[in-house]
Structures are given as structure tokens and as C-alpha cells.
Length: 392
Picture 1 (cartoon, helix red, strand yellow):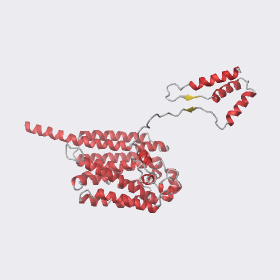
Picture 2 (cartoon, one colour):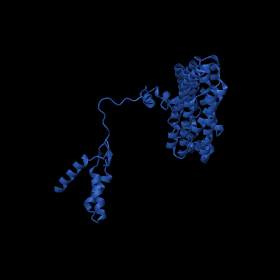
Picture 3 (cartoon, helix red, strand yellow):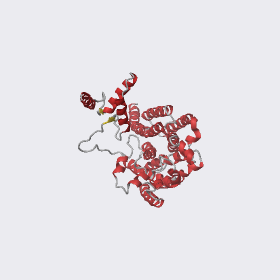
Picture 4 (cartoon, helix red, strand yellow):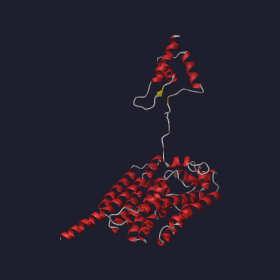
């Protein structure tokens, strides 16, 4: 009786214990106490028959007690979230496969397609002026639609490959949620809407934008042909570096647009080679190629070379666009970011590759802000020059 009373008291005390500094109480059940006492008795050579029976009871129980964290309780409304995945999950069930097909739940690709457009639009803005908000919005819608169309084309081409890879086997076409015919109809809808966006631009930009469609269609095939599909992706994803300037100015200034486009292609080679290292084992199994497989342990030196080429192109674009001090200050920060990204990269850890890959969104946004700041600084510089001339 005394033993039962003591055991009950110990259980009650254990239930009241919490981790020091933790926000969730940690419940220590009776089994943990008994196992601790059992180990002590074993060391002392005093393991009794009753403790053996108790150990057998807990080890075979269907509800084996263990250390567990109490689930946080939410009272009232759940916390509101506007993440892309939450929006997709909140959509009607018949719509969700189509939203996942266009990767609406994973917006990083849309960002990486959109950011070169913003660089070009900002560089083309008049001195002392902010980038045209309507143009930024229009290109944002276009990036969302064209990225969705590109993913749809990719999944239609790669249906059989995706089935063999755990990470891609749940994609809507590979899993059978959407048939190829349904995907084709959906693709037609996306391209029609994207055409509507393109028709809002000038004739020069319409022709230039239409020229990129061949790259969008053929890119998914490149991984079957060459170890450099990331280069073709760079040509595709950075077309906005040409289109943004022409949309604002009416035509391309190639002295600015070509170095900017070249820098974007180098940037894509950096981040998508890092991304490809996540899938290199699966790529070997299914027989597709990538720069990760081509470069292997020489990846970091090659990425360093791409970084030097990217920064050189950005400097050339800045000089030809008459950019100012804030732009070059941000370029220094971008170079440091890329250097740290490459130096700390572990190509054999998929989670680290994903972390480095996603960080490129912030890098692109930083460069955009640098261009905007440099453009605003132009007005100040020109005002100072005019004041000096008037004083003379």
C-alpha cells in the first residue's frame, strides 16, 4: 500500500515538471521513472523479478509511454497566414492540382523569373524617378503565368521520369490527378492570359516576348541532351532583362541590356547548379543530365567563375546606364553574399543546397533596391552639377 501511494505521488509530481526555459510542458510518465530506477538497480546488482515484469509490461504495451511534448492549444481563431502553400490548400479541392501544377505553392521560381525584369525596368527609369509601378505589376503577372506554363510543359515532358523520383512522384500529372489532355488545356489557358499581358506592351516588346516562347518549350528537353540545361534555363529565365527595358523605352539599348542579360544567365547557372545538387542521385537513376553531374567536386571553382562573370556584367551595365554610388555599393554586397553562399555550400547536403538556392531571392531583391537607389541618386548628382555650373 505504501508503495502504491509513493508511486502515485511520484507520478503526480512528474506530471507537474517542465523543461527549464521551454514554452511547452514536458510530461515524464511513470515508465521513465521506472526505467531510471531499473538502471540504478541493474548497476547495483539488485534487479528484482518485479522490476523485470514491469519492464515487460511497458515494452509490450500498445500505448507505450514516452517523453512527449504537449501539443500547443489554440483558443479562438487560428493564426492567419498568407503563405503561398496556405492559399493553395485553402482553394477548392478540384482546383488544387492545377495550382500545384503551376507551382503556385512554391513561389521561389516565380521570383527568380520576375527579378531580372525588375532590374531592367528600374535601370530604364528616368533619373530621379522610381520604377513604373504599373509596369512592375504587369511583369509580375506575366512572370506568374509564364512560370506556371513552363512548369506545366516540364511536367508533361517529364511524366515518366517524375514517377521514378520520390520528390516529384506526387506532382499532379505524374500521380494521375491531372491527365495530359487536361494539362494541355490548362497550358492553353495560361498562355492565352500571358499573351493578354504581352499585348499590353509596345510592338517591339510584343515581338521580343514572343521570341522567348521557343526557349520555354524546348528547355525541358535539354536535360536529355546536354549536361548544361542550366545554361538554357538561364537564357529562358532572364529574357525579362531585355523585355523590361524595351517595355519602358520602346526598344533595347544593347549596351545596357546585353551585359544585364549575360549577368542574369550567370546568376541562373549559380543558383540552379546549387539546386541540381539536391537531385543528382535521382538524375543518375533516371538518366537525365545537369551541371551538378558535369561539375561534381569542381562545382565551387566553377561557381566562383560564374560569380566573377556575373559581377563584371553588372558593372558594365551600370557604367553604360550611368549608375551612381549606391548601385556600386550594393554590387559589393551582392558579391559578398555570393562569395559566402559558395564558400559555405555543402553540395552533399540537400537541405543546405535548398537553403542557398532560396537565398537568391533576397539577393535579387537587394540588387533591385540598389538600382532604384542609384537611379534616385542621379537626380541629386545632376542637381549638384547644375549648381556648380551656375556658380561659375
